[in-house]
Amino acid sequence: MCRALSAGPTVPRGTVGRVAPDETTGRPEEVQLTNLDQPLFDGAQATKRDLVDYLEAVAEPLLAVLRERPLSVMRALRGRRPFMQKNVPRYAPPWLRTVTIWAEASKRDVAYALCDDWPTLLWFANQRAVEYHPGLARIDVPGHPQSDLVLDVDPPAGASFDVVVRSAQLVRQALADAGLAGAVKTSGAKGVHVFVPIAQPATMEEIAAATRALAVRAARLDPELATTEYVVADRGGKVFVDATRAGGASVVAAYSPRIRPGTPVSFPLRWDQLDSVVPADFTIHTVPRLIGAGDPWAAELPDAQPLPGELIEEGRAIPVARVAAMHEGKRRARAQRREAQGE
Image 1 (spheres, rainbow, N blue to C red):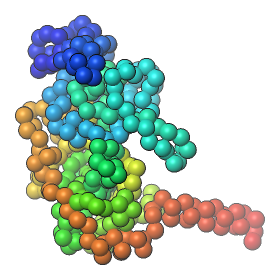
Image 2 (image 1 turned 90 degrees about the horizontal axis):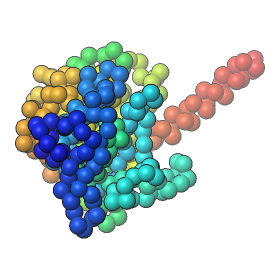
Image 3 (image 1 turned 60 degrees about the vertical axis):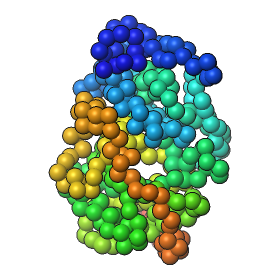
Image 4 (image 1 turned 180 degrees about the horizontal axis):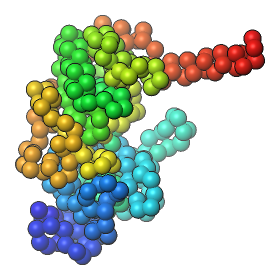
């Protein structure tokens, strides 16, 4: 299976992963691999060797999703809780491509990796990078535009996948009503992501506004099932249609494994498959044979579409969820203080 490594049908017990040398980039012939037979993380039902094998099996379609996008990864190091890494570590090889982006929240530059090829993906695998979260903007396009509108359908704790499917269909209907079409994939956790490729020109602000409008429209179709309430306590056990994946946000890539029991994978589906599967059907052990040499995500993504002006204007009148939640939290805190003081 692991043709890019040194020998045999799987990753050998040695510590060297062989890759094709590149005189232009200076990449080495070999990427060092270590501790391949250790469990990937608690409950993974997989080893680091399994992760490397899986990533090679899906390298072509996964790299197509990651290419030319700032990459954040979730790493699962032994003896530590999994953590998100955005800044490339200082010990990264000199041939690893990066892009530096100003992070307004933390007021600093962040050097993101660009995972454009198999050697880079193999190096990340050896760093126990299990999850791959590319940004929505492409750095190879002038102006670095956001390429997709994304709605995240997130169920409440303990809910069945059936409520996710029904809520995703609300999103699909809201898209259709606006003259748009999207593709759906499991998140690799409990929910699904709906992607709508957006034609340019379209600013991040316009895409964010349209995303908010679509989320509200979808929830309005069945308010007993779905909600756009950002604060968990205010959702009333309903499915959250999350419109916050915009601007500088990242979303777990199609074909990326997740740090969840059984190591599930974010997997693309046809809309007519949604009600006949569950997310646990798609793991690093099952996905390679399901896709073969194909790329279901590329096959399902519609062409880029222009955003309707009325959708953008509607969304501009809807408060940004995080900002609204922050103001509401401050209001509630003030009310609690007044109550405690007997006012």
